[in-house]
Image 1 (tube, helix red, strand yellow):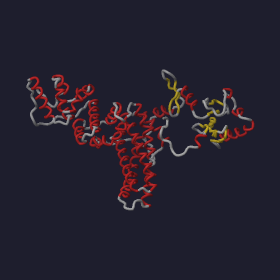
Image 2 (cartoon, rainbow, N blue to C red):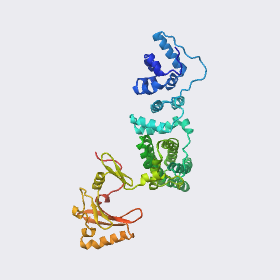
Image 3 (cartoon, rainbow, N blue to C red):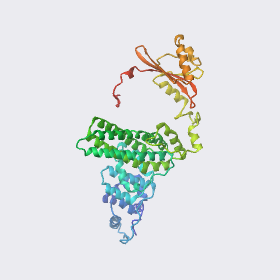
Image 4 (cartoon, one colour):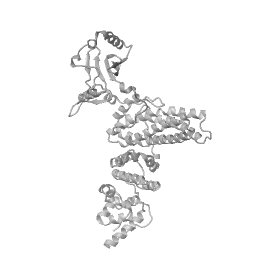
Length: 495
């Protein structure tokens, strides 16, 4: 029989089951064939040539070893292809098999295997990456038990392994005003700021006298401009990541968000070093932060953005666009050419629509949906007293929390608010409501001592999108414990 690089490994193992043990002895990489999942993916689809690449062997080495073992055990004569000729393409095409190979490469990377050998294996077996393959690979590894912190720790090295394939991938082209165009434009502005930070950090690193007033001012200006990065990251965290998670793609949010938090911590620490005049620490951290932020730009434009184009529909992008203004824009004024279609726009802004489920109806709110039961529970658990009055001064609602400050009873519902206050204070209530109704005021606040507690009371005008007066909120909160807060508390103290 003839065995070549193109022979399917699964066919070979079915014909000669003893080869599984032989292959495992030949290379520890083949021990993975004992895993039923890998046998159903890589084992079933891989050729002998691809299997050789996975085990860091040449196809000729593997073919000779297999042929010798078959002859030794069965006495069969095995024909091998003539030496020379054009080597066969060993690229794996099946999606699941490719993901298993990528996971295998990253597991070996995390185990400390040489990065150049892993690059060669990737080049032999995968070559080009689809937009979703790296995120899917990382997500699978997390789901299979690899800690998110470990995936994040070597995220940059992952990119190095796949560098050549990613280098050939261009960022998606979009119309000005599209959320991705806006994010990419922010990245171009960010690159200029990072260049200034690198230059300042390098000067400081080699400056014998440490900080000069001019050098310190330049670094602080760069940090002031870098503070805008919060808006860029928030748009990813609050706009893109939730929609990707709805589509079942959670890898990017888990890994990228953790890196965002590292950047936030680095910039905060860097500012404290600069303000304290610690030159050596400032220089090192400035260069480190510039590298991490620059690498994130690469991850966004080579991995995240292409994946979102493949994953999200026009209606999803309309939702992203709808929330941009609430977050804001970093360093740029966005374009205005791209606009969601009318159908997409109305689907996200239609007020008070009801969405039915098998269990209960959900009320559509500006920023989400809740059932009436959940709304009632949320209001009941607010750590303050809340009363709602309509535009005609009628009491519509009060919250019934366990720690009410001022007593209320169902009898106040439907009553004029003026009748719920002592006669001596009605004139104050009337003045507040008059200021709310004529538009001259939006808030009135007081604080009083009640049974040795400090109570903060606020009246807030409720207005619609056209600024028309629709009613009033009365909020009362016990702030006694808040008075003594100092410093920060970042750790949980339940123990």
